[in-house]
Length: 330
Image 1 (cartoon, rainbow, N blue to C red):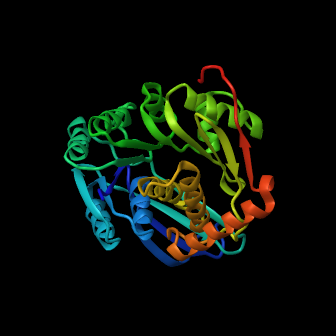
Image 2: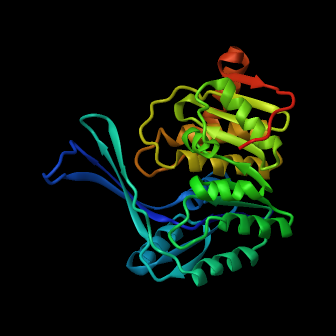
């Protein structure tokens, strides 16, 4: 089986720690420091491997911090290929405040990337054999908004499928061209994409189906944190609410969802079943501290709970909307 290719154009070194209290001016003494290779595609690759799949992570790294990132990727034991850039790889920092139970996340914009550097990434994708490519995360400065569309063109030539997890201008540019297999924005990102409010369940599900039926993407998943997610296909939309868990950290939850759902699809699962696997992994990720992602045993346990709750509670857990013809999407 071919590895699932993941592409991370703006990766980071994910640092996490705990502090008693965060306040201005004073030194904040931290503990439980942890450092992981981060960024959407790298996180997705970690999850795919955790669940028993194969991944190949292509990412940019550079400057004095690039070597550290490469070492962290190697420590994750995922196959990888990095493209060297001149500027420094960014470092993000998550701090958990014990006194309040709140999590503070500091995420830099990241380095600038030259045309020669981002074109080398395209060549790396072109030179890889895959059936699925996950294009995940923001695009760094200097990379054109339609970069992920170029990745989609390469995937199409290979008969492969593009999975898109981004926001803002890159999301709009890629969906404008179409040809995406699976797209996963958050609720806020989807609202920004549409340019209108879709806060109630009916309007959200209808809008998601509109986007799919317009030909922009075959499957659209809109994630809503602890409120669950909506998945739309040409046949309609479903909403699933995850089992209740104690949330510790939101770092990497969306990436876990995307990696796990893509893993399920690559194993031949129907979209609804793969959606459940993604839901289980995203939920499992919030139960782990700092920059740790989901654990396989937790995903399996939550997947069983999802099946049981769906059977016992029906509409309280899973809501479905099958629509007729719709207007053209944004």
